[in-house]
Length: 347
Image (cartoon, rainbow, N blue to C red):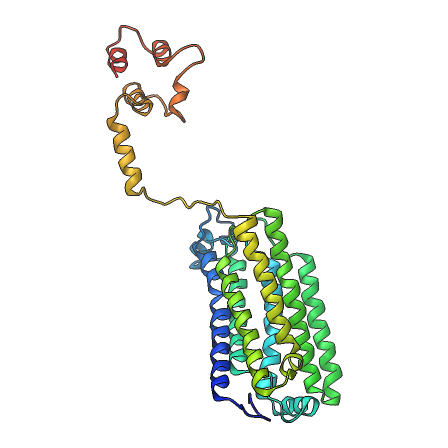
C-alpha cells in the first residue's frame, strides 16, 4: 500500500498531500464529463450514424453528434489510460513491485503512487470507453480514426507485449510496469497533437469542450503540487524521478492545456450561436410590433401575400424592381382599377 517503507514527518503536509491528490482526482475525473455531455447535447439533422443501429438506440444516434471531436485523441487516450492503470494498480497493490522499488530507490522511500492515482485511472478508462462508444453510435460526419493513430496503438501494445515476454522469465516486475508507465507518457504527448492540429486546420474549437481542458489543467497543477509536498516532507526528490511517468504526465498536460486555452479564447474564439427551437419573448414582441406597423416593408410583404396569395418571397426587397417600386410590380399582377390594388397602396 502507499506509504510502505517510510512514514510522514509532518501531519499537516500529509493532510495537504491527500487533499491535493483528491482535488487532482476530482478535476481529472470531472474533466471527462463536459465532452461526453457535449456530444449528447449537440444536435445533428443527419441520421447517418443511426443506420448502424437498431432501436432503441436509433433515435439517440440520429440526434447526437461527435463532429469536431478528434477520434484519434480518444483512441490514443484509451491506450494511455489503460497503460497508466496497469502501472498505478501494480505499484499500489503488488508487494513484489513495491519490494523491487525499495530495493532500487531505498527502503526509506515512500512509493510514488497514491490511492487517488488508482481511482483516477479506473475512472479514466471507463469514461474514455464511453466516449469511444459515442463515436461508434453518434453522427460523425466524414470523420474517422486515422491509419496513423491505429498504427501507433498497435505498435504501443506490441511493444508492451514484448516487455511482458522479456520480464516474466526474470521476474522484473518493476521494470515491466515501468514499461507501461513509459507507454502512457508517450501516449500523453501524442494524444494531444491530433486535436491541436485539427483546431488549427479548422480555425475553430466548436464541437470540442474547453471545460475538459480547464479541469485537466487544474488536475495537472494539483497533481504536480502533490508530488512536491511529498518530496518536501521526505526531504528527497526520489518521488519525482522514481515515478517519472507521473511527473511528465503533469508537465505535458499543463503545456498542452495552455495551448488549447490559447486556441479557444485567443486564436479561434467561438462564433457559434445556438438557434433556440422556440421564439423567445423578445422575438415575439418584435414580430407583433412588425405586424402592427402597416407602413413597414414587412407589413407590405404580408399584405401582398394575404391579398394575392403569391408564394412568400425571401425578403421584402424582392418585391421591388430596378426601375420601379412596389406599385410597378403590383400593376403587372393586377388591374390598376382593382379594389385590391387600391387597398394595397393605401398602406
